[in-house]
Image (tube, rainbow over all chains, first blue to last red; front, side, top):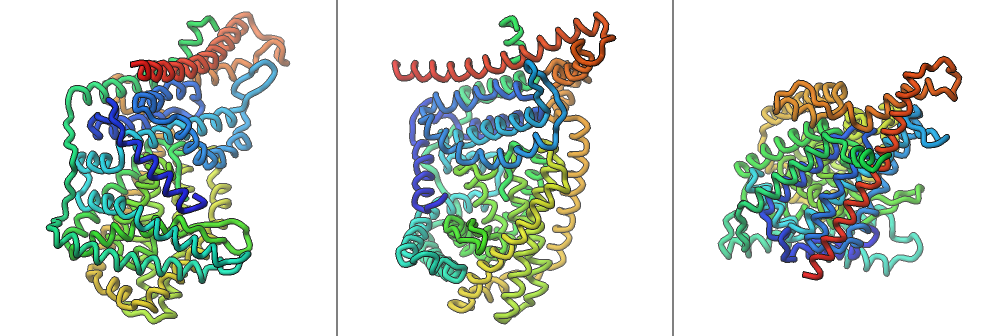
Length: 267
Length: 338
């Protein structure tokens, strides 16, 4: 997130993918949200040494991404940005957990390295599932799903307002930040003071804008509810999707698929 | 300070989800009942503001690194705790979904650490106590600064506790705490300075905003405090008990499934890689090539078996990955040709 405009552009791109019209896009958002949550919980519930158990889970994000026709490399780049955090925390595992759990040839592999690898794999899995969910559902779709799943209405309205104004305000923030960059030389004008008044001005502009927007909305009969154009229905397709993936997650979580596969291949 | 899913156990993540979801429901009811309807769109736009503000990175003096505003305290000062909590939760949710900044399961933890703590612990118990009902400039600055520093000590403490309870990272509690707390002391000072700068700017340019935010707060100190205390106690209790329970039984999902199906024991874990690895590790001590020459024929054959299974685990793992990605590739081909 080094430049505001860059971050914003990225944001727009991810959401624009939700305009696609594939079978995955057409599913009721509730099915996708629930399946993703179930996926995350299943992945996270694997023990910290159960590395190979995590591998079959890749099928879910791969399925969503391919059937949803999402550019694969684009998501890989986005995932690569967040992984360093997991690496940073997991990096210390090999230092603290030096118990040798496995020998490959003469090389002893410690529990720390295995749990480190499993942290990184988990991070890749959960992050890719979340990004894939947005890419095939879109933010308004997710909000609608959450509201129909019982999220309180003021919070749903809050989320949608936030979403609508992020672009407007981040663009204004971007303009201000660029203006500041063009007027600063070296480290001049980069201190807290400038930052404070910069954000203060952004805040005041925002505040006044909010008042104007609200009056305009009231004038058009806003009553606290957002209406969406697309109506979703939880039908047979959604049930199959949800039950199918649920069964898959439970199976993969309980049966060591990778292990059996290796045994089958004669190792 | 955003936590990732990879470091959390389902018990801890689920508990914090429950706490945060409960707070969201409570705050939604409060906002709907008590605040004038002008506040709701304002919250949305202010959330967007915080989002934009977080993108403007500032240089942290003398460290060469940069940081951005957390904003929990700032919004609590401007909007009051309920509206601020909802606003921050919504910002964190968008960050989790679009930037994968903090995971979906970790969302509960993140909302608690960066929303609940500043809005319901620091704001009423520290900020309001220092600032009083009609603060002057100096008082306002002191209250903001101290609150920011305390908030940025409590938040990371939450991260450390949640990570320790989950037990995925091998980092010992004390080491992690010693890493986190001092760094966040520095960040807290910067956050405090930035918040002070913004608040005093607003105070100077439009003093009525801060006054209004303080005035709009209904004087319901006592109910807030009881709710707050009960939330914290519930969080600590359930968090503590659940994670203690979970650490005795590492497989939370399996436990849940066993409860649902009524089966007392599922065979799964004993055959998993984990079990294979531990039993393998137990046996390696008796490998004939090592110092124990008294290894019997029986353990020898066991060793060979276990070596076989663990290798099959890894080979199978690789095969699984190949199959998964190949299936994705084939699906893609089919779509293109169709």
